[in-house]
Amino acid sequence: MQQDKEQLFQLAIAKVKETIQLLKEERKAISEGILEDTKSSAGDKFETSREMLTQDLKQVEMQLEKNQTDLDELYRIQAIKSSAGMIQEGSLVNLGTDWFLISVSLGQLEMDGKKYFLLSKNSPLGQLLLGKRVDEAVPFRGKPQVIHSIL
Image (cartoon, rainbow, N blue to C red; front, side, top):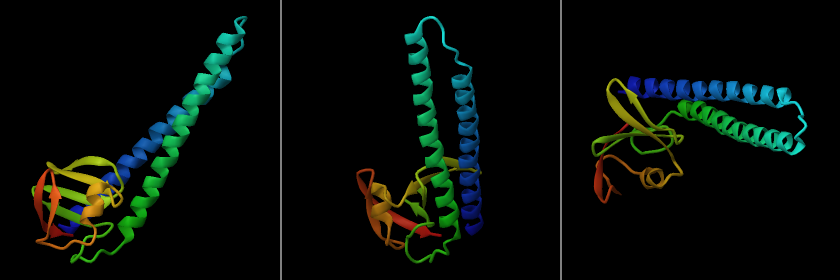
């Protein structure tokens, strides 16, 4: 199961890298659009178009920065040698019927037909899980769920 955890980290890292690459391509396309946008006789139209492209560029830059931060966090958390006894950053947790990797908020990933949820230690569920041990219960989806394993 430890191998699954490592594969899950690799899958998450690959997903974030792919997102970063797509955002870089989008940034390049927007930058080229700004440079190619020539001033027409309708000056206001040019200014509005250019401003919209500039705002789009700022949005992409912010998303790119967030994804780069997530990638750096994934590498940092992957390097943590977790103690299997207690949930901490980097722990892979089986709670009820679900699997959670305490890392960065990436949502759901599927690997070998199983669904895993990547969540931040700062998320509401992440905060509930931190410090817990096997066989302890936490409130989840309206009822207590037992922690079956921690990797």
